[in-house]
Image 1 (cartoon, rainbow, N blue to C red):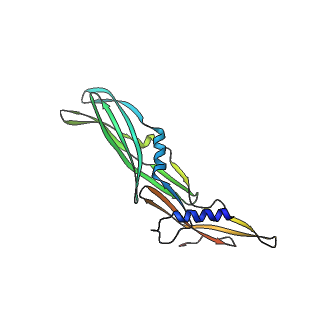
Image 2: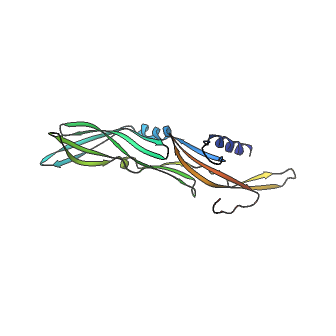
Image 3: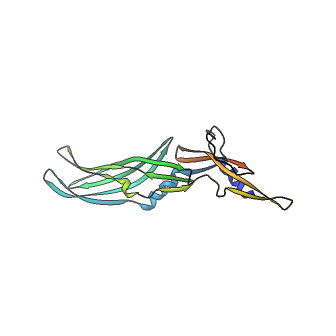
Length: 203
């Protein structure tokens, strides 16, 4: 019991002062946490065949330094791509949007790379010849999933001095997801009552 409320107090202290009302609980996901996943994967490579303007051959690519950048109200996927096509070698960039959602019904925070395309091409006499586009998101299919700020239990039994028990019901409401500089914050208010709490609109 004491540990539960201490947990809520600690989480509340982590919520930025920019919120209009202090949150009772919050979960913070740092950019470095997300990028640790990409660092563990390391560079990835692929290859394919090209047949353009009468020329045939094989191209190869290596995607490295993949990462997510979090800025206020924005999440981006960024990576560096090294491409070899015929006698041509060059480096390019891959970038795309990242979807960040909170699902209150399952108390789940999801982070998913939607699309990050880089072009494979070579140049002849200064003219760029397009070979294909590679979508880097296809190689990072798993979604990041984190637990949200809702408490594990919906109610807590409190032992009273007369040997009876009183049940305190807990209801989260007003959940809010904010993307800030280098972090994601999902905050929630909590309502406590000695009787079951019904869902209400405009809480």
